[in-house]
Length: 455
Ligand SMILES: *Cc1c(COP(=O)(O)O)cnc(C)c1O
Image (tube, rainbow, N blue to C red):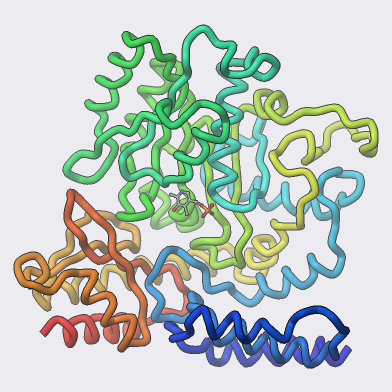
């Protein structure tokens, strides 16, 4: 049991001091460190723990560092780490309700709470924890296909007289490219709608594309609205999309992978207006809810289509009870870990208002950052109430120094992390704060370093 003490000490140390953000380790050094692990002979467990924890600690970009202003990667709150341990110890098999009744009910209880926060109707609701946003989006496309083309479940998409297609904005998450390939629709069936000046999905362009695609023999069946684009934090016009989808009998999916978390804040929730009309919704728990990775959520108001998309017969599985959710019959995964416990425990420990305060503090911090940028002659190029800031400086658009040059210097010289994205053909910086540990001092440090490197 000595190793359990080692693990506890590691957790305590890490929470006290997260470690350097940008480790200067090369791959050769990592491979060399792995050489002794030839697995030929058993090694003392405490040794193994010491070596492995040291390797992971020193060879990782510490996304949990408060000066990491990156890609929604979570700094896990402590209840999430504890929940991971508990889930690992009891290792409930989620696939069949009868094997893990408590775990399954904890998950459904938590999901239904989030569904209520999103103002989704809870009757006819099907919901599940997924590995992440990609799997949730994948589930959405599968259920939408089952709803619109039930015959394709037996005969395949290839049997349909006309090819189905779906619509995303140019700023949508690229998981949809993979999904279009994986579900057999093909990448050409993913119609990419341009964005308007506000970087939102352009409704006029969408309407034109729908008409033209129908005339060309396609069958549009689904439109995705992104609530919080990954690169820009911009929210597509959800109420207009909902109405259009209603009028044209299209499936309306909202990808709120990271920004869906604001549903828990009464102050911020109005920015998601329209999401309550969605046929299906994606929200990640491992982004802005600050939980460990491997935690997405999928919701749909079409329990029947959901059932049809995933149901199978397997006579080796335990018989299922009535009126309970049986995950292997209603979701993409079969054997699955107890993903939802961490959200349940974190919600229980912080309470709804505690979580809301955490999320609001981060949107406030992004507003502070925008003000500082304005005061110091930087330009913000995106408009959003969410904590993603795209910015640049006139020196970068006119001089020899590019945003990427500056970024490389920042990684090499500073203990902070941001990224770049291309918006309207221009490379700009992308700052995002979703870490509950970040403070004004951390933001000031970043801007100080950027300014120092610029001049
Ligand atoms: C991160 C993200 C995804 C993908 O989610 P994963 O959890 O990384 O699979 C999908 N959509 C949006 C808008 C995202 O930001």
